[in-house]
Length: 325
Image (cartoon, rainbow, N blue to C red; front, side, top):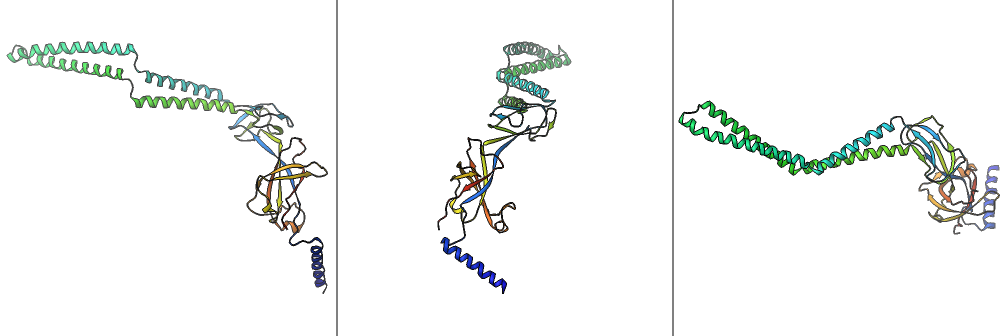
């Protein structure tokens, strides 16, 4: 009987509340509270390296392009020098093939051809004189065969010299020239890669911001991708708020919303950057058991703050659009 009485009282309270406020559905809050965060960028080496100098402290203001940390590796200088030497050798070999034989080489081959031609003519004449004598029996068969062999050898040397001269004048085949040019480009790219590696060991700030964390000291060795310095951007704060399904239809990416800090009358303008595509339970840190049982949608709101008053960790109240009744 007591439990029935409590139910009647609660139901009457809800009905009375609706009659007074004129509500026709669930109550929809006008504000949503989130916690401010800032965009942070972790800067670290792209390969294992030892810190040589750390040029910033936590709290330092940096500009994009400022030097943050200098790293070094023991083999970098020698590897870069070797890559440069290979690139020079490949480039010169490609140029040599593209230019072809030098005039002096062609002239020497032409002179060798003339010598072999003269030798071939002489041995051919000797053979022509001996053949009638051999037919008459005045010259032995062995002498004729020796002269005939010398004539064939001289003719072969002449043909080889002629072909060598032709190849020198024609130059290298197009396939060899293309392969040498490709090898030169590959060697140059490898050398450029080592120089880029050396450049990557000088860590520069990618953005304007403030050093929020210094994670390395001189002499320490970091793995590839490990953060050496964290740069935060106080000018780009953001907060994630959670709204119910009744508020969700009124929000769209790019919409402008107003927000305020606790105890501060200043109105900050924010822009909806993203809206979650799936519902989730309210985080455990939020309010009452009843609210934790509700499914809400996360909405990321970005602010443009030039006053530096919006700091990470501060709660901020975002005003939501009024829903149609």
